[in-house]
Amino acid sequence: MTITTAPKFVRTLIAPDKFKGSLTAAEVAQALAAGIRSAADVSGTAGAVQCELLPLADGGDGSVDAAVASGFTRRSYTVAGPTGQPVQAGIAFDGSTAVVEVANTCGLALLPDGKLEPLNASSRGFGEAVLFALSLKPARIVLALGGSASTDGGMGMLTALGYSFLDVQGRQLEGNGRTLVQIHSIQRRDFPELADTEFIVASDVHNPLLGPTGAPAVFGPQKGAGSTEIAALDDGLAHLVAKLSEAGLPYAAALAEHEGAGSAGGLGYACLLLGAKQVSGADYFLDLLDFDTRKDSCDVVITGEGSIDEQTLAGKLPAAVARRSGARPLIAVAGRSLLPQERWSEMSLNRVYTLADYTDRDSSKDPGLTAALLHRIGQEIAAGLRHQ
Image (cartoon, rainbow, N blue to C red; front, side):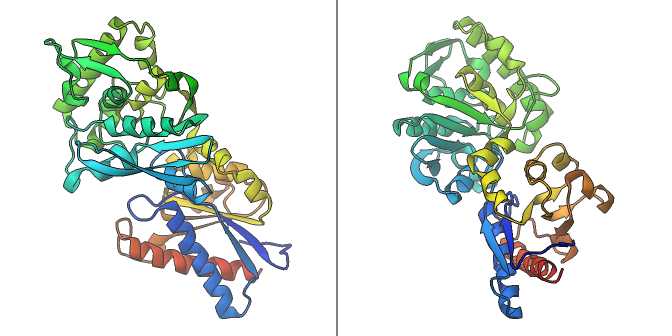
């Protein structure tokens, strides 16, 4: 990369997403910054490259951490995990906006011993975290839906928010994928707080609830669902939609076909039932974390994620960063890149660094190795910036 009119010092904005399974966005940014600063110290040019850190998220897992890193306050609350075990969840709150995420309430990473439970996992803990957020009286709640362990159409979440799902004998059902087909009737209790709060689903998932591109078919396999479970979950979700229609929600069937209804095992559908507004996850979080103001005071932007590939080009967070970085040089750092150099221009990338170029080992599940490699890449970035 060449900076032809380098200032006396170079101001860098380090704005990565997480490296999933390895480091949070904040840890990625810190490792890169540490490498950049150490290179400056060794060369005796400390201060020649200045670092501003802005860990990012796109509405999936890591959204609470990114909000906290940008100045929100973390609030902790105990909720039911994906299979009922208590977990200590965190939400982010800045006095008016709360960020609540699936991943740290009932996400895949919280399954005991990592055992997948495609039929038994529930979204109830997410609903309990939403209730806790409501107690803070926010103007709005951002619902971050990535990383879910369940495919229950939000039945668990809705149970926590005042819905009663009853079987044929009038007994309350536990909300999970297995019990969807057992719903005989649905009762609702109004929560005034729900009507007084703006709900925003920040997501870039466009799948409907049902069918070949729906939640069970597309996302079920990563949650442990085989063909039999996928069929059962699809039937169960269709049954849920029918029962919601019978319960007096005439728009229930139409919302099942809405883009994004299939996100997070159908939690997107339940959020739509609550009147949530859907927005682009990447762009919403860039606005929420004040990316535009931060990048305007910098000369170079460094972004990245675990893998840069065709999905990145389709609108994942680094692509949104690239689009909003303007003419300033843009560097990407990734665990791996499937994007050949001749296509870097499609994201206005000046340079791509990948961990795979520095090791033959798999760094995707090794936080220590990932951090060490990012530190080394940070040093090389600093050298490149100083010597242009």
